Length: 317
View 1 (cartoon, rainbow, N blue to C red):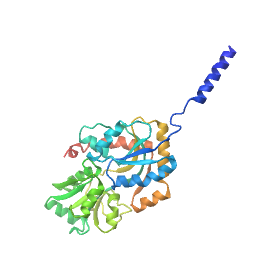
View 2 (cartoon, rainbow, N blue to C red):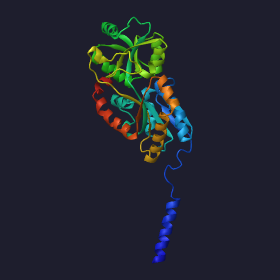
View 3 (tube, rainbow, N blue to C red):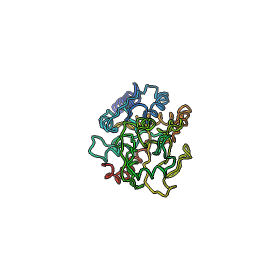
View 4 (cartoon, helix red, strand yellow):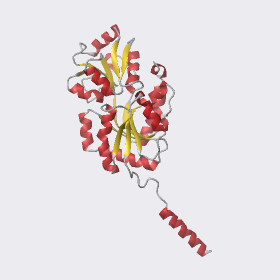
């Protein structure tokens, strides 16, 4: 009996020694990071800014792959079925994926994705060309109520699309001729080229051209002024009350990605976001840095569904 017990113990010990720890060798090859917009926009710029610092901690290459089209819907649907092995990740302006879900039938569910980490947040901003006759928000509002103006959006189903519709309703503007672009870089460039009357975009996407004197910011859609844009007014200063769409920039893994892999990625992205080189880039772009880990990011996803559902009707416009 004693010999049998010793034999069983030896077998068990050997099994424990040889049994592989899932994800222990992760990552062992390059990681693909999908950007749901074209090159040059805010999503793309931030992904390329943080990627080198993440590579430092993961000790592997991160390849950026732009997959624009349908506001990101095509990329999200492909991502839904990606292997949950940590080698395919996605970054986008959250919660645009949930906005797209509320617009109609999709082949993906944001709640199925596995949140990892979010490093920045931003508010939407209303901007005009620097040579525009509207130097203040009241002047712009008077013109927008007099006749339909052409406004740029970074894609149907984007966070700017939703904020634009909310703003129109709150400001009692009857109509705007919206012109969608694949990404924020397109709408901002079109405005700089005087092809639009105004555009809405994430504040970070407009900063370079604002600083270059080509664009003029008129209103920031936020409860409080942005410390990076202290001279830009917010709606409540003009007596308007409206809901705002908080936006995050972060990274997620496919559905059912193991917790061990998520932990490795969360640690790497968190450390990368604290690198001085990345912080310097963030300051230059006027990014508002945050530290939102996997669990907190997951809560943000849960909270976004009912909040955005309130606007299902106007999202179908």
